[in-house]
Amino acid sequence: MKLRSLIAGAALPLAALWAGASAAQTPITIGAIEILSGPASAYGIAIRNGFDLALDEVNKAGGVNGAPLAIAYEDSAGKPDQAMNAARQLIGSKKVPLILGPTLSNEMFPVGPIANERKVPIVGSSTTANGITAIGPYVFRTSLPESDVVPVTLRTAKEKLGVKKVAVLYGNDDAFTKSAYDVMKAAIEKLGLETVTTETFGAKDTDFNAQLTKIKGLNPDAIVVSALAEAGSGILLAKKALGIPASVRVIGGNGLNSPKVAQVAGDAADGTLVGSPWFIDKPDDANKKFVAAYKAKYNMDPDQFAAQAYDTLFIVAGAIKAAGGPDSDKIRDALTKAKYSGVMGPFSFTENRDPADTSGVVVIEMKGGKFQMLR
Image (cartoon, rainbow, N blue to C red):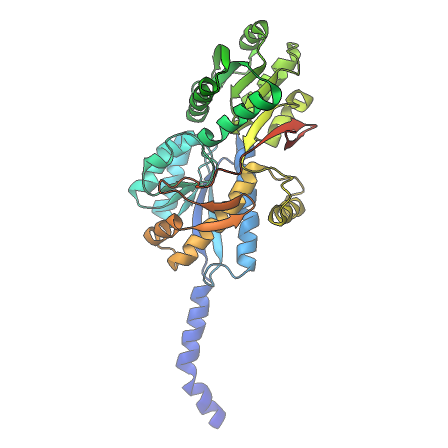
């Protein structure tokens, strides 16, 4: 009887505790728009892998304020219209408090305004074109803009490899490749390099022989290329087939910083230079742990896009925790104050919601299918 009385007396508190436990176990679901199919899916799949690896670790450590974190993925297939529909679906139907992505800058330019208008923070981990965060106060990015990376790459090529004259080849109908070209052009001029010719191609082009034949005849020291991985691989293969010497390096922007380039172009990719805030052989313990965990989970090496995504998920989880839950305005405010140290190094946002620390940029080159530090 006494035991029964104790149980009866505890009924309301226990019910409250069970309700609290149930509520704590309800996932906080954020959205992600990435390219998971189509020609540029190598970027989006690497990003998803990075998010999911970090997500496992966040939830293993107890989630966010006791609640598990979940990601609702939408595939943009690299199509801006599809990315816009995905954003509307995530915000309108799934009521997510934050969106990760989209993958490419030409997707963020139409998607960012949707998130900004609905006052939902959106965090790009791979959008590097100029003007991304100018879209509005709810638009953030954790990826260094090309304007911080490309000048370092070109200056290093000049100082270490003696590059004095270059040919330029860029995609002229894509927001990302066009923006990167603008940065390249300005950096080339500032460094006093001679441009022997500037050639263009379209996103659907697969034949680069005419442009490269002209470039070959002008004998540049290097070819500066703004392209995504698929077109970049085609350019490298055509360069080798036309007999342009291996000593004429290809200097790429962020679009060429992908293992897919080596997978498609093979040894034609050897010698390709890119700038990066991350590379696989960074010697710090955090990076070694990340690389080992990534290989164990996916049976492949991570790339820059996976590394950026991995850190980004921790940054976002920290902001949700600081906000006390899935409140978009509070998450947005917490992001502006975020400080994190991960595989990319120390991280915080500038007042314009770009990465604050640009000191970690290194120049890497492709050798034998793998990027390594330029010596």
